[in-house]
Amino acid sequence: MSDQIKDIVIPILKNIQGDSAAIKTDIAVLKENSGRADMRLQAIESHMSGFMSTSRYLGAEVNELRGRVEALEDAIKVK
Image (tube, rainbow, N blue to C red; front, top):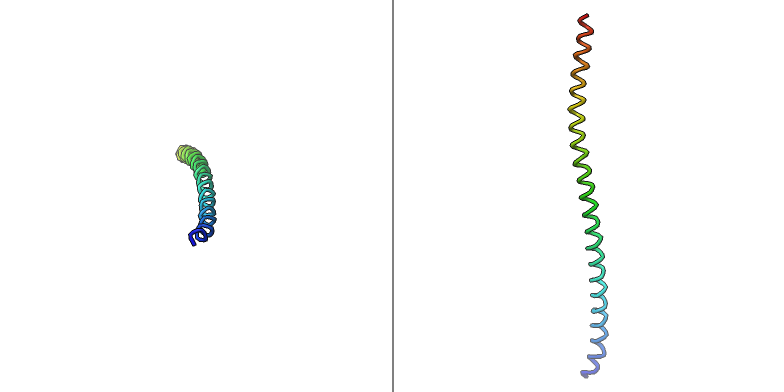
């Protein structure tokens, strides 16, 4: 009876072992792809940070130019 159990259990255990090896491979691939995605996200965040900084600077420039244009308009109206 012991041989019958081995004949049933051993193939099942081998299938489980093969499946777990495939799962380990899939997890390794996911980790590698996750690392690449993290690097790309960091690059995008860095770019967006620079973009936002430039945007704030340009906003200040536009406000200053708006004030100068208004001053010129007021000077023209006075004449």
